[in-house]
Length: 509
Image (cartoon, rainbow, N blue to C red; front, side, top):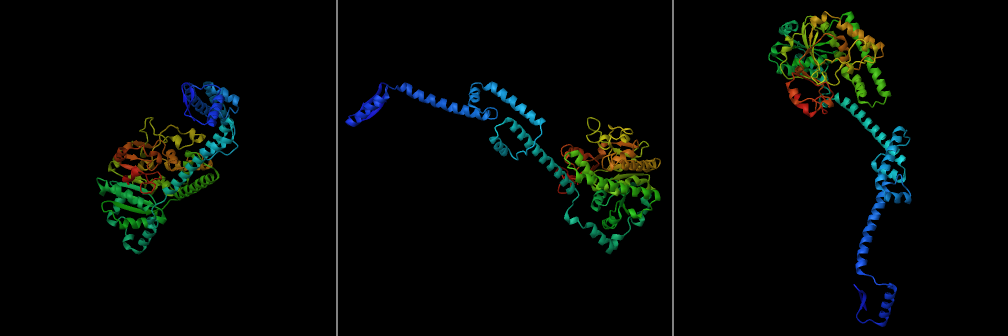
């Protein structure tokens, strides 16, 4: 016996056995009433949809309110009042976050977002969530700061490296000086010796212990000069580098210009100058010791403070040769005007007109970084070099003054000799030592800003582009401006000839 559902109820089809007939009768009796197809199918569909909706709604609400709502009564109340609960949840969350912001975090934060989710799955508490989230952010911030510090240290260390093939260059040149008569030949040859003191020639001065750097400066200047035969280079180096430097320029002669190489041991220092140089050496040692001990003892996270420590410990700050430029009039008593170049510059255009500049009676002609909108480019005011929280500085100088640059300077040595610049320099060195090295931030420029105060004549900014080799200058300097500059100064750590050099500037080397 078969059954089918019709609009009038359940009907029997075919002849069944008595047993089947009895079963059908029992089924019909158990039904108790007729079931309409119009009622059954829509009811089942609607019930299914409502069940799914109810399940999803309860799940969402349970998840959404797990921190502040743990009972079925609360859940039921939220089921029918979503808008008000969202506002209350937001208020509760803000309150918990404010408490976390003002409170101390005692627990270690989660290392990953998944770990935070796992922790919060077992802690159904909004306050715990806020404090745990704060702990996680603080832990991440410490990691970021530590990574930044390590990055700065790595950049600093890498900046003073150079290809392994050049590690023994000075030693090989010193050996060449010992065995090769040509490497010991006089610089300059006797027939050109008179040019060394002839004021009609263009005299350039370099203080360096870097053979290749000196070679780049000399070669680029000569190559781009309109009158290379008028150039006279005076290279001053230390005793340990002298033989290598002399051998290099003796073997690699520059026929169109004159090059002189002198070691510090070749100068007949006066007793007063000797005492001054010794004082500078002692001051440099104190600076290194002070900043090195503080660097080891303190966990430095602030970028600007860390950069100052790295600057203080850098070779350029501690190098005696860098500080000896304050003795230019004594080192070259027969010269009237010189152009001073750092050993990390590249000359791109003819610079012969620098010797013709009228400095209006001032001692130095220098580029000021005053082309920015506020009249002085960021990070180049006196306040960025001198410590104006100290009364010695604040009572003598103006913090908003724009600083001039080292790297390429024109010095009128005759005007310099009429001043007390060198004496002023040493006077402030002594004050700085007595003040616990707190008058200015590390570097060669800060004490020079004080010593040359009022004696610097601004020259056109197109002469020099500086601060190359720093990461913050990646996008700030256009290629057009770089190409137009007569001299480019790679005083930052990322020299273009190193692996960490900035690709954008590689073509300028």
